[in-house]
Image: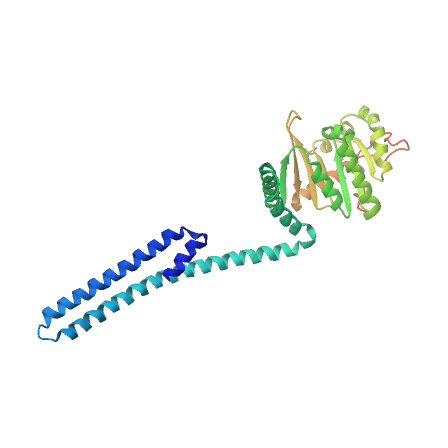
Length: 328
């Protein structure tokens, strides 16, 4: 056992020379204790049985000393066996965790998770240190996002265009979107072009129904959306415009934020502070919250007219109580 401990030190578990010295010192201690035990037994046997032959006194002392030595080795063995048991149990726990993780990754074999693990392992072994740190930060960010999604919701500062494009590519049934003055400047940006292209592919390749409702404050703001409405109708999006000032009060009092509902199962929302300076993006798959967004969209959609030939509604009608739009 002592030799095993020493070899572990040589293999990186500690200092090899120090391990050998400790082993020699412990062996010397055992021998000293054995000699003392034998000496004590010899003295006691001489005192208690002075008439006995010296050879039997010597044999008795040697036997007792040997027994003490064996006991010492047994105690050491028991301690090392306990350490070995703890180490084996820890290894089995690690193996169990690794097996569980492997089984979970196997479920996502086609989702890029194995490729992510392989690439992450490779990237931290090449390039400068700042590349390694950046890779670790990205992995941690993704891990935190996955943790949030286990609660069916995640949030990030600012507008997350990557989320928007990914969700559009994932949609298989329908996309219901509102657009307020908060994101009006977005439509002149480069990400907006990629977003419209992703919607066009969803409509043409997967048969996704896309409805977008532009919400303005006054009817006088509607003509300014003519070009934007035409552009979106050209890619197959069903577009309507509604002026809040011409809606019934109970509709105006409803919550008005920019949101998009994907496949009637997940909402993408953009929030802003009171000064419309700082914004944040939330994705939410909680059923109650998503149903509220769907009801709000249908409420506003039913309150808006269909498009006129030039792409802009001629007027705004009030709620008719007609059926809600359904995905086709």
